[in-house]
Image (cartoon, rainbow, N blue to C red; front, side):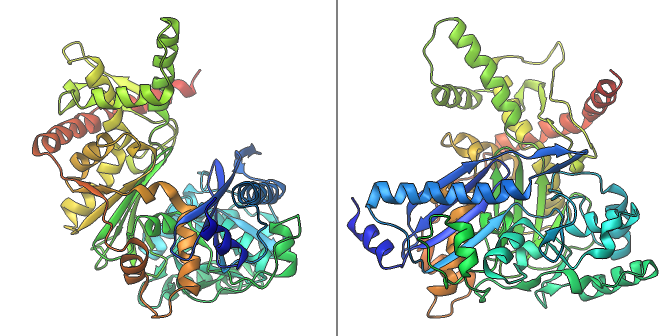
Length: 533
């Protein structure tokens, strides 16, 4: 038993972070030195209801309560103590989407970031704002509901994200961390608030509709990292801990999105740093020194939790197609009677990819389980493409899938590095793509032609990231900036293990991606053909 951790919990000095991911809700309890001392989780899945992806309000609260109960169970088993007081709490969740309320009542089911029914609204707003407005952003959902003449829009008195909703319900505060807010409508990095010009243009656009509200009337207040965002109410404490042990009055940090917590968990909030999250989906976040020269459809502009401008390349797909192929190969191994754990099989297959040709011998993998807006496809079909003359072997097969998993990510980042000449000092990788040492790092270094670092703590993920943001509110007596706090207090010189790009790999990946882009019409044809049968 860790007596120090037990004492930390008993004295109410532990800090709790909870993040709602797309398939798992995770809780992490950390000590005053920011080290995880207990965890809990809950598995959940979104539902397709009336053609839209959603999670029910009941699923949100059951999931939160079950996740906290799992954490409480872990603490009781490990330390033989109840959680009664905490130093601080933070909530984060998948960004964007649409949660519209009148009073405490949700007006339509929660529309998640996965929904792509907002094409007309996103296109019109992008033109109006002269700024790329993605399909999944809250403002796109709101304007699409207006264009579709949805009856509920006139009744909205609050519009928020999942993290903002949970925070509101447990603190009574209608606020949002600036990073999550920047995925509702663009934020001005100078004011660290919603862009006033865009807000005015939107209000003018919808004025003829005669709604009783203006945009700022219904949006949560944007808060910077470190600001006071309220305290856990008695009702909120019971919503979180149904056993009744957790006491109210605990400070709660501004709620954030999963992109922001990923940046914090990888120490990538300072300008000229970045991170790549690569798992079921993938995205890169590069913190910019200045505005880009113009908008790009492939790049989403958000902010760090302390308001610095970030260029985000968001990809709907990453490792799911690799997982499907490994499952097939595992079935083949089982058929032969070869004992092989799934983890060992992943390790062997990832490592064999290192023996493949730098350009994968000409073979190409499209990992499109779903569509990819960066490459202009609203739907997807997983494809493996080869010609009779390509070097088709297991090493090239696996390497092509590893390249394909980050191919769209490369296309988006090539705009940043080659057209906008953005400079980056450090890119941190985290997620399942990097689980096998060296392999994923080496592939991403080749794709981005940049050194890639991985830290052991990056595996702690967004729940740890939001716990760090909660700690930043209560454990920062010297009032350090968020970047300095992470550098000096949390990571204290730990920059992870770095792998530099191999010039041969870089050249090979460039040949691969040119083949990949040239063959995209095959993917487009597969999507069209599949829809006809």
